[in-house]
Structures are given as structure tokens and as C-alpha cells.
Length: 406
Image 1 (cartoon, rainbow, N blue to C red):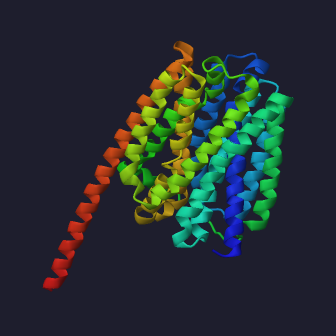
Image 2 (image 1 turned 60 degrees about the vertical axis):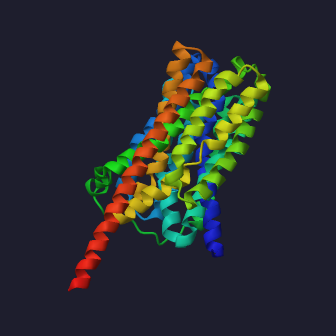
Image 3 (image 1 turned 90 degrees about the vertical axis):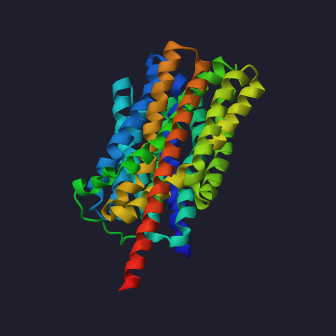
């Protein structure tokens, strides 16, 4: 890659790091927000659900609508809205204003992620697309490693509002970097929303969409309530919570790196086994939570499998659009992140239901059941794809025989 490619990759990594920190830091601040707003922990958890639902609903619609605009000014404008959204969160004195600010930030975040993936796909050499996409996804992982623990520490030290002044500052840094590195010549594609939504007319796309959603839902049913689980089940002192989030993020870096290699080695064929392993790991927490060491080991393995499917699914959606609906390429680039946020909404909602009606530790086996469902969908999708490839080969063979007979 050229120096310009490397700088652009670094900036897109920075962008996803900033977006991920703003989105995920709320998980580490649920107890502080609940206490400050005088609301139940499940109500604070609904902020995570609302963000994810807004992301999931708004991203495909606004990505399709904005696809006609040049990417350089569009990205800068959206980062500006992101900065304002975080400022409003930082000054929120009521639950309703906090909720509105998170919804607006969620929609902007989703479109920016889709644009980052589209920029990488359009500007990088073909053989570097997979590694670069993996690096961009790593921004979210590093957000878990550095951004979330740091934001959680800032929130516990200076109040949760201070954490969002921190993400506002990160947004300003990202705006400056994007101004310097995003190529100016990336034009939009004039296509109607109706034409782009044809992508969802393919049943296998719809089926594939719910694979990462279920996998992330399985993890986030536990991760959303990880702070209270650590405090009330594993009896971890509050001052060590941010450290455990840091360790969780460090382990999840390896998940992203292994996921990139998985995508390069026939990931769609293998990910069903990843989800089965995920189910076993989540369910194991029910037993291992009897000791601090055992619980932390289960949580570490949970982090190790959480992002294994990201690069595989991202390339699957983008390559499918290239072959069947080229005008929906930007929309396709958003599907993995949209699916992930559908999963976050599902997982945090499931977690809220479990924590309200059962015990905190019951999050483990309920998440494991959802991971099994992801494995079933992955198996069905892989078999459909294998049948389609076989039919395509037979059709090409018949065409070759026909041409040979002429």
C-alpha cells in the first residue's frame, strides 16, 4: 500500500475507535447513570438497547439516502453531528434528553461506519481489502481495550457526564484527521432507495443478516450487565471494574485478529463451530461464577470469540452486493454493523428481562441458547450457498458443452 493508503487506514481505524468508545462506554457507566438519574439499572440498560435499535433502523435508511452525496463532505458533516450529539449527552440533566441524544448519535454512528467501510473498499487494492477491513473493525476492539475502560474510569472519577466530554474531544480529533486524509474524489452513486433495498429481496441476505445479530445478542445479554454481574455475583470491588473491562478488551483484540484470518480461510464454512464454542463458553459462566478466578476465565473466553465472525460477514455482504445489486454497495457495507447493533439491542433487552425476572447469573445460560441459534442459522446459510454454487457450476458446464457443440 502507498503512504496515502496507510494514513487513510489509520484514520478509519481512529474513526471506528472514537465511534466505538462513544457507543460502548455506557455499558461501564450503567450503575453511575442509574444512581444519578434515580432509575433502575434495567432502565439505564435500556439506553444501550435504544442506541442499538436506532443504529439498526436508521443506518440502512440514511446510508441509502446519503449514498448520492460525495463521501468527503458527507463524512465531515456527520462527524460534526456526532460531536454535537456527544456534547448534548454530556450536558443531559434528564433521562429523556439523554435518550434523545443517544438516538441521534446512534444514527450518525451507523452511517459513518458504513461510509468508512465503503471508503476502504473503493480506495484500497483488491488484495488488501480484507486486512484493511479487519483493521477498521479493530478500532471497535481497541475502543473496548482503551476507550471504554478509560471512559469508565473518568466517569467514576468525575461523574459520568465527564466521560462524554471525553468522547466529544475524541470526535474533534477524528474530524481533524478526516479533513486531512479522506480522498476528495469519492463520488456518490445516484440510485433510489427502492433500488438499493432490492438487496433484501434475496432470502440468503436476510438469513445471513441475523447470523451476527444472534451471535452478538448472545454475548451482549451478559456484557451489557457485566458491571453489576462482576460486583454482585463475583464480588469484584467497584475500583477494579474498569481494569476488568480493560482486560476484556485486550483479549477481544485477538478475537478480531483471528477473525481476519478466519475470513481469509473460508470463514463461512467454519463460523457455525465458533458459535457452538461461544454457547459452551457462555453457559460455563453459570458454573464458573462460583469462584472469582473461574468467572474471569469464562469472561475472557467470551471476549475471545465475540468478534470472530465480523470480517467474514462483512466480506460476504459486500461481495454479494457486487455480484447481484451493485448499486446497493454502500448499503451492503453497513449490514454487518447494523446486524451487530440489532444483536446488541436483542441482547441488552434479553439481559434486561433476565435481570428483572430471574437472577443475574441466569444471563449465562440464556445467552448460550441464543448462540446455538446463531450456529443453526450459519449452518443453514452455508448449505444454501453450497447448493447455489453447485447449481452454478452445473449451469456453466452445460453452457460450455452447448458452445462446444456449435
